[in-house]
Amino acid sequence: MKKLVPFLFIIGAVITINSCRRDNYQAICYGNDIQPILTRSCTNVGCHSVGSKAGGYAFTTYEGVIGAVMTGNAAKSELYKAIKGSHPEMPKEGTPLTRKEVNMIKAWIDFGAEDCASTLTVASNCDTVNVTYDSHIKPLMTSFCTGCHFAGGTSPTLDNYNGVKGAVNIGSFLPAVKHTGAKPMPQGGQKLSNCNLRKIDLWVQAGMPQ
Ligand code: HEC
Figure 1 (cartoon, helix red, strand yellow):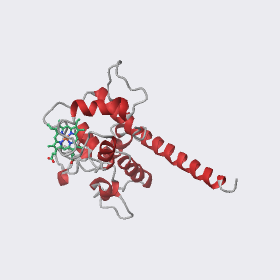
Figure 2 (cartoon, rainbow, N blue to C red; figure 1 turned 90 degrees about the vertical axis):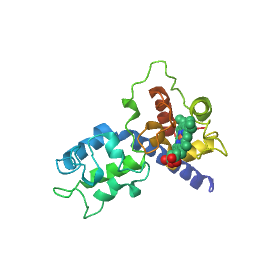
Figure 3 (cartoon, helix red, strand yellow; figure 1 turned 30 degrees about the vertical axis):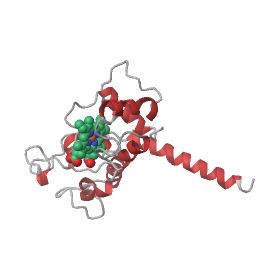
Figure 4 (tube, rainbow, N blue to C red; figure 1 turned 60 degrees about the vertical axis):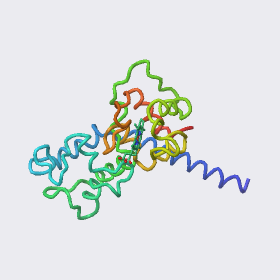
């Protein structure tokens, strides 16, 4: 019993952390939570509007904002670097973002900078029940990706579970399939269907079960 108690405590802590992760992840949506802050504080004419594009950035659309974001890594994202700290660089004029807003933007980026999956329109016959690597993701990779991304072919290797998981974790995979990064995939091909993108979102949200 003496040994069991700390053990159970650790298990409990891990479960709690994991479920928080998921809650956070789902709670912050680009359209509802992030864009209104940017619209208020960043997109004035002369700043990050479509016409002015100060510093090369327009923050009026998801595609524009994601250009200043390194998915999954707020600390390395221009957007977060500019607004964090007690003497933030941005907004250049006007009131700094509140601490809560800054933290929310950080969490949004760290959890994948998603345009919420729920905003994708998906065909009613799209199978999104218990999405796992073996049942849903692997067939998708085989159809659209492994022709180039096999071991010894183009990096990242996407013909096995750890390869795909690794690509998601380093932050290159989601921007590639969602066409929000510099290297839209499949290269030279059509963007995956909303149904397939939804499967990928749900799989990542669920912690990438094998
Ligand atoms: C026709 C060949 C081809 C297909 C099919 C293809 N890719 Fe790629 N992929 C490439 C090449 C080539 C690169 C390297 C591009 C570069 O570095 O400029 C690449 C790079 C990538 C990268 C790294 C991007 C980065 O930012 O470094 C990811 C992730 C990726 N592909 C995912 C996928 C996924 C997922 C699919 C299937 C949905 C896919 N690719 C289908 C050729 C392909």
